[in-house]
Length: 315
Ligand SMILES: *[C@@H]1O[C@H](CO)[C@@H](O)[C@H](O)[C@H]1NC(C)=O
Ligand SMILES: *[C@@H]1O[C@H](CO)[C@@H](O)[C@H](O)[C@H]1NC(C)=O
Ligand SMILES: *[C@@H]1O[C@H](CO)[C@@H](O)[C@H](O)[C@H]1NC(C)=O
Ligand SMILES: *[C@@H]1O[C@H](CO)[C@@H](O)[C@H](O)[C@H]1NC(C)=O
Image (cartoon, protein in one colour):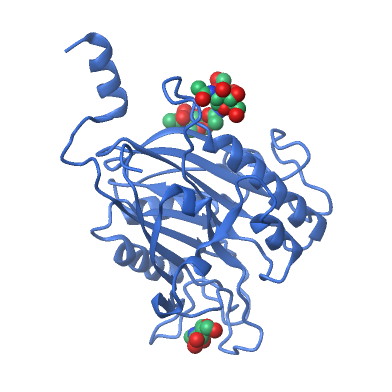
């Protein structure tokens, strides 16, 4: 084995010519979950994180067991919650992401959890949703708070297939900020969809975008994301799955009340140019956030998508 081959194997695992794996579809499960920050002064109906934590842990473990390709995007996770969830998911998981206030440990994270046995992280970055995306802590336009997107470039180790997963949380107040954040995300997705591989300079990498957008589908920021005119437009994966394959709820935000009248759909998973990329979307689900004990695991429900992704070399 040549030294360079050995080095690339050591760094990236088998970026492979393993024929047995090539041509097989990757069974991808994407989740997004606004987990509600750990507050010391809970809302009516809200339990402390210490009560919610084990319920969330068992839900996340149940939804990802035997699905090593699962990628979990979260919002509102404080440092303590990120480390708690890392502990609860266990050593086979890793995560990326930083606090939005200082680009380190302060403020809410939009972290991405993945299993390094299955995915090789090759690049990751946080952008602030503002006119100055590189400026840590920058607030955009009319936003009330600094907002971020966490971006991961991952390579599926068994097949060498790359993908990009973006995890975001839009502002809850600023409409201009939400519209401009949507445009910024389209641009970031286009940038990351290009490989830096000199052998295939123009090959497009699949990009998925998940998160809490704090808007319903009738909002202009949503239309901006899926605008047919924009390069590399996003598709709402819910729309790509036949209604018969929808599972669970339609609304994703419930608050901590059983009243359904103010529930809304504000959490999404999108795919960039999914038809061109040859994805098959098998199911779409909005899971529950409350069981027999009546405890709300969060004020949002998790959104889950199952897809088949053509392995590199096949599409
Ligand atoms: C991910 O980002 C962090 C923070 O910038 C950096 O320290 C780390 O090296 C990155 N990991 C990879 C594999 O690029
Ligand atoms: C490609 O490489 C250039 C130069 O190293 C870098 O600035 C850019 O961010 C990379 N783009 C992607 C999509 O990785
Ligand atoms: C890649 O795309 C650019 C812009 O469309 C084009 O100018 C260039 O020739 C392409 N390169 C290859 C190797 O196809
Ligand atoms: C979700 O929406 C679909 C289509 O409008 C509808 O058929 C279904 O009953 C809804 N599900 C729930 C749980 O409300």
